[in-house]
Amino acid sequence: MSRLDLNAVLDWVLPGSKVLDLGCGDGAFLQRLKDERAVIGVGVDIDPENLTAAVGRGLDVIQEDINDGLHCFTTNRFDIVILAHALQELTHPHLVLQRMVDIGDEAIVSFPNFGHWRCRIHLGFLGRMPMSRAMPRHWYDTPNIHFCTVRDFEALCSALCIDIIERATIAGAAQGILGKWWPNLFATSAVYRICRSAR
Amino acid sequence: MSGDFPSGSVGLVTPQSVRFSGAFTFANGATLDGYELVYETYGELNATGDNAVLICHALSGSHHAAGYHDGADRRAGWWDLVIGPGKPIDTRRLFVVCSNNLGCCDGSTGPNAARDDGTPWGSRFPQPQVQDWVRSQKQLAEHLGISRWAAVIGGSLGGMQALQWAVDFPEWVEHCVALAAAPGLTAQNIAFNEIARHAIVSDPDWHEGNYLAEGTLPARGVALARMVGHLTYMSADGMSDRFGRELREGSYTPESNQEWVFQVESYLRHQGARFSTQFDANTYVLMTRALDLFDLARSHGDGLAQTLSRATAEFLIVSFSSDWRFPPQRSIEIRDALLAVEKPVTYANIETDDGHDAFLLPNQTYEKLLDQWMRRVGPHESA
Image (cartoon, rainbow over all chains, first blue to last red; front, side, top):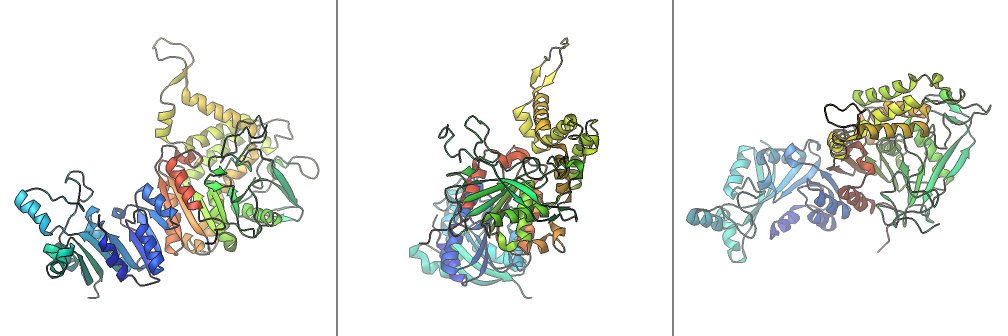
């Protein structure tokens, strides 16, 4: 999977930030944040092998199911809470988003855009659930149970009183500019910097 | 004789002992005019003294954590699984110390030791608490020329002791590992301990704890206490897998008049019988009581998080999915308190059927996690 979204995330993390990485996997990105942004980081992952790999990098990680509500973290504990390409795997994405903006001053969320034109072709013309290099699994055995589009996500943020501070879109090389103008159609994935609305 | 031990073993080890002659005052105010600690060490203390690791034993453990006592010895120390050259607690680079707790019965001063008048302490031995063990181990560390532990590590009661170390002497503990531990006992835990103690003190050979002076042993009581204890160390699924409903003696035929002995009965009886002659009854009473009294949250001020805020260590907290003596939720309490006061902590819940005993048993995920985490412990080669 191309993880260009991680570069965007990296750009938004200030040096020395306190960071929580939800679904940190083997810790490669959290380590990069430590190396390049000198963050104080904690990772969360549920998979024992990921956990061991992250521990092997010298990281502090908590084995926990994000779906269980992240009650172990107190409000305003982190500068930034990151959820990179895991939103679509959650049982209740909206609850996790709310929790993220509570425990972090800011949150960064990236996800594959289901509104991308290739997805629409799969669904609209072939009548099949989309599959691609980034989404290689069949609908019945994919961990991705809650796909959304760029517009869906922005509508959810609005409904949850979450402000979008910044948005970055990832698109194929030829469609970079289109991805910026029409993200819902041309972005393969999107990255958002969000926070609890002051309103 | 040497070289005949399994690879990865520390090999032949010899217990050592040290006598501290000054008075020792227990947390409850009782005093000893000096005491002895028996201990083992594995590996070498380096010149800078920053590679020392303390292992804290559990309820019925001892200083014999790894290796063998003689060439014919086929039973390695209780935690040989993880201590040795190339193992998670790697004796090629770490200096490992394990002592028998004060008040235990494997050589450190305890109820089975003789007083100045030559009679055994028996029931007169003071009630030690976890803090007392920490302070006595600090004396041992100073005796060994150690001024800071690269890590203090333990499982069950030993894990609680490691946590106590981290809050009693924060500057002494760089890393703290608590496996299958709890911040304090629940009513159910205390109840099981009380059943064990009741079994012992109800034995006609108990003699108010002075059975040694009477030339006897409350072996039936200790055996029963151990059987109850042992039961709580295993999980229901683990027991089903291991013993099922298999008969060791007798048969399932309806007309059978033989005596029936299920495998699980035979196992528990064997565990009880073996333990009853090896372990001192007074020590068992004192140890279970020390467990009951352990209360990390109350040991410094108010509440678990506030207590743990004293610590400067990095923590590894591990629970085991089928442990019902100190279930994962108890480790999660410790983890959450550490997170609340922003202490560096790693937490894992290991999937296993081995119950509370899992921290002593082979398990790839567990061993690998501990191995990877231990790499941050001790001196690091500068690049």
